[in-house]
Length: 144
Image (cartoon, rainbow, N blue to C red; front, side, top):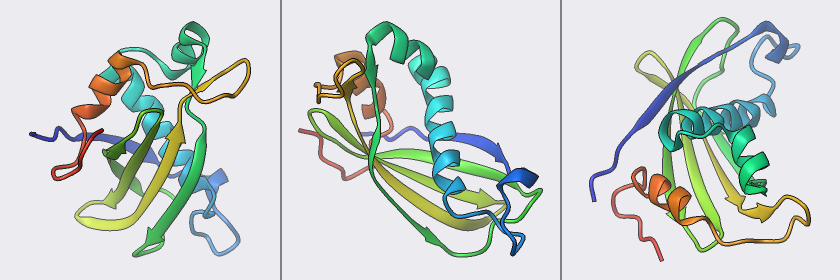
């Protein structure tokens, strides 16, 4: 399988800084979600808000972790590379690599689960979403 890459920019804004003048750590997961929303619009060709409203499905995060190699500072022009680590029947493991120039600053990994918006009960991933995500599945990953 040939993995496609999805890269988008994420501006680091003043309101996301903490007292130490670096990115307040929970904001990284907000950035990751923004990247996922950008992926939806550009690669799935349906904005995430329309997916929520029309499919009546959502992808809440059930697990999140991050490793930092360097501080993220106000005004940096971040680039984020998005990939899929694993696709399950109703869940997806995502990877977000944040760079400034050639330097990788951090990596975030999240697991999202497809749920019905009215009951928050688990649902299978829709076939069209699964196919779109599979184009970004990392080499060597196995999809059930």
